[in-house]
Image (cartoon, rainbow, N blue to C red; front, side):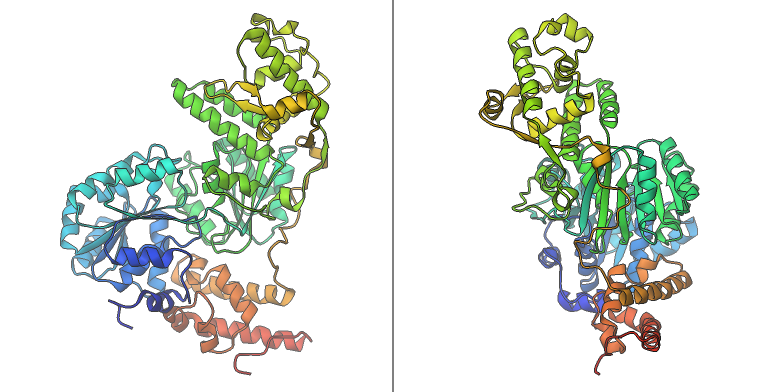
Length: 623
């Protein structure tokens, strides 16, 4: 087919092997082709890359893609070359002579896509060259990095506004997987997008299962969880470099191939760890948050947060690295009150009061998510302003509702203490101070404010601090208490709280801190999505072997050849002709020509093996 001026739907199938667009992709592609500025918020795994790759192959001129990480550039260029699209990148990993060679190719119009880091795009000579390279559009990936309100702000992204001013006639496509309303508006303003078409897909990732476990003997829990998923890739996030190193050592000692990744490692070591993970030579990466943005590995089957994330937006972004291929994946968070207390102490060290207030509010929301007994997906989507009408049936609280107990007495003691403190002092206090009073704490504030003389002082000594803190947050979530704005987040009784306090309503609470009664971390993966049968599993593993061989021959990650989702479809459909294989989603014309024979041979061999062992294989195409 002709490279230029092709119908996007035809090009989608020809190059990428997809019979149809995902939600919003076609609308975005057509607006981009029409030369409009576009802002697109699509969750990880929704196909953001296609929104600029497809326009690049069906129109003349060069599409420049601003990308934050060298590894991501190489992955995407490798993937495009495999499907027959000419693409290249310029970055610091290349020798000077190689950069010169690629720039000569750009001057001759040999490439449809050019990947650049924001720093390089802002160099004066690069902007001048772009004017001679028939630049058609600029696509800015991870666009939230341009906003100081974003969770991963990068100062170098701010300079992209200068490029836009120097090339105001070049359309811009800004893409991100996560952004609050404030960040969305800031992106549009910073990039000076002109009358942009704005698209925002649902934040819901239905293939992800969300779970939270109390952090009790967490290392044993982690090892059990990972070992129960013996052939699957995953990421384990921890806060400190020391913790990352320790977790990697412990997993390796337990027979799990793992590598650490953090900013303290030499660049070569980080690149090596990332490459081993991309190529499936290492099954688990233990990392600080320095790892992840722009990782293009679609078959990450689990993401574990060993420590508490700093906020819900970062948590959503990090868990979003699981299941990019659309297959089931799991997100596990270990939670403890101790982690929250460490965060709180760190926040208190910030000099700016406004920063402290924002960080405290974010921490409260993160703790509310972790301790909630309701649908976790509903809480997570609500943070981004999206309403989930029904419970998801794919988080721990929906799949295995936690045990409950009659918390009426606990609630009345807590609510009474809130009222007594406010009556005695004339002002409200935060959660931690209320718990100090309930436990009979000998603190400076308790003594100064004479709260040791209250009738509620010490009435909660029979209950642990963790339970009181969790209960207090649950009372806020249930609407029995309101938090006032401001640094302290002072608690106030609501009308619903008064009904409980004065005996007009009873309360049932979840067992939020009872490690002996929680679900096991090493439990088998969720069964909410259909699981393949034994025959399909066996063929899938055989196809993975073929994929790995072909990937090694081309020195690319295995998923560049075919994704796990495409291999699963092959194993399920068992095509035995090139025509049948071409009908599998993800098999385009170039990949069919290059790899089709090898995969068909593996399928036929598996059919023969199945029949010879008395199994039942599916009938071949055209039988």
